[in-house]
Image (cartoon, rainbow, N blue to C red; front, side, top):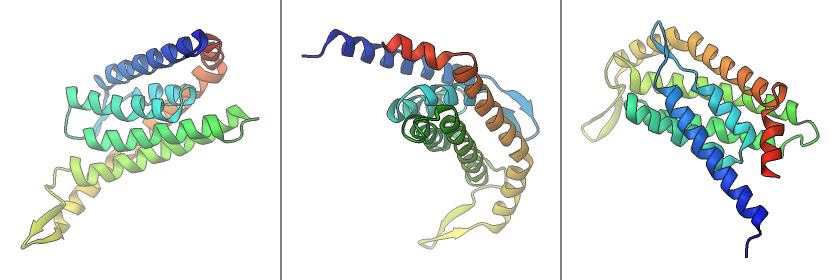
Length: 195
C-alpha cells in the first residue's frame, strides 16, 4: 500500500503537470506580432516546468500542452509543436535531473540551451514543410515522393525571415525559466511542497 507521503507527492506532481499544461495552453493563445508570424511566451512555461518535472511530465507539459494550444487556437502546426516542444521539454528535464547532479544550475543551463536549439531547428524545419506560403514542398507524383523546388525555396525564405524571432523566443524562454527556478526560488519551493 502506498504511503501518505507517496500519495501526496504523486498528487502534487499530477496537479503541477496539469497546471503547467494549462499555462502552456494559455500562453499559446496570444503572441507578440512580428514579421512572419508571432512570438509566443509559452517557452517560459515549458522551460520552467521541464526543470521542475520529470521527463514524462515535462513532455506532457511541453509537447501535449503546446499541441492542445495549437489545436484550439491555430491547428496547422500542432504536430510540429508536439514533436518540437515535447523533445525540447524532455531534453531540459533529463539534463536538469540526471546530468551534473552536483551542479544543478549548470545542468539546467545546458538543458535549456539544448532545448532552445531544438525548438529553433524544429520550428524552422516545420515552417519550411508545413507553414510555408509556397505550397506543398513534398508531393506524391506517379507513386513517387517528389520535392517541389519552387515551394521549398519560397518556404525556406519565409523560415529565414522568422529565424531571429524564433531565436528570441527560445532565449526569452530559457532565461526566464532559469531565473524563475533558480533565482526566484521556485525549484526550492516545489521540492519543499513535495516533502
